[in-house]
Length: 131
Image (tube, rainbow, N blue to C red):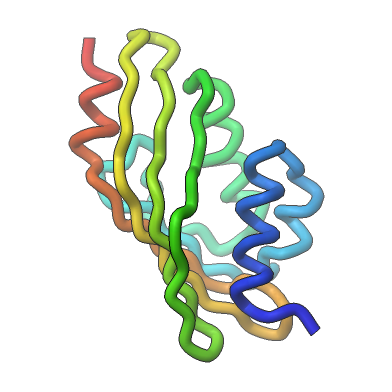
């Protein structure tokens, strides 16, 4: 059986290579996904995996050069996982680069990821968007 932290690791591995089908298999169909307020793609809470693809992953790929999510550590407790790491990339319209630390809170249910909450320094990200 896949552990919750293995599910999160599988998500990040799929994300790093743009493997959307795998991402869709690890996300629960009844999802609660919330980006940090003031993050450029914040849209409240999304409740379907396809909303994450359409509202976050497609725009990230479109708008950023070499956008990466580098996970450095995990803390786990039962079905809850916190991933710590760093975002980096260059915003294509401005050519400005950024690096921003993050914490992602995940929850797993019935072998899938059912909850995501992002914490990051949105000011660092927004600086890259400024002209």
